[in-house]
Length: 144
Image (cartoon, rainbow, N blue to C red; front, side, top):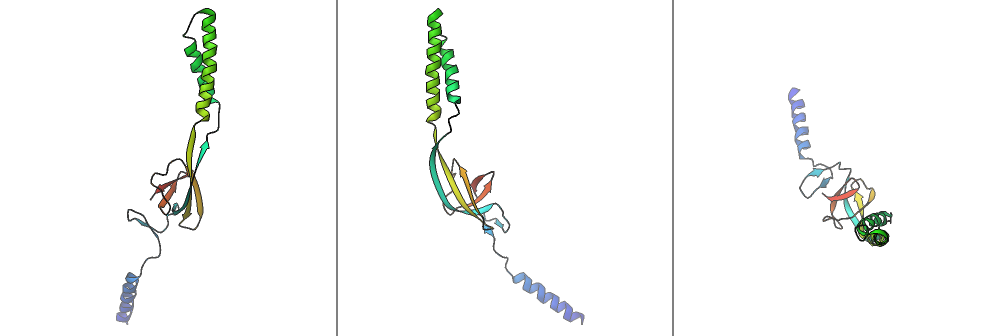
């Protein structure tokens, strides 16, 4: 009787060793993870250029720098006029620099391993392309 139980146990153990594991995700490094919640495949990448919101910081910095530089010129009323002119010119230049600071952004759509669709927006692709295996961390897509 014990031989039958032992034989059945060995047969079950042998058959279980032949089974394959279910799906999973294999990264470029060969690491296999069946439960990578933050992993997925890039479905689409959209790029766009957008003007940063004008905060006025460029104008303020320009006024200060222009005023300080203008104050270095002349004496008396000429010094006052140079300070005012420097502040005005600096404000205009600083505002234009801030306004013309266009940046390219990328909306990356990722189909996550669990079926979710996630879109992240970032400045650089760092090698991410359509079809890339990625991991989402801190609101960015990184090659996996």
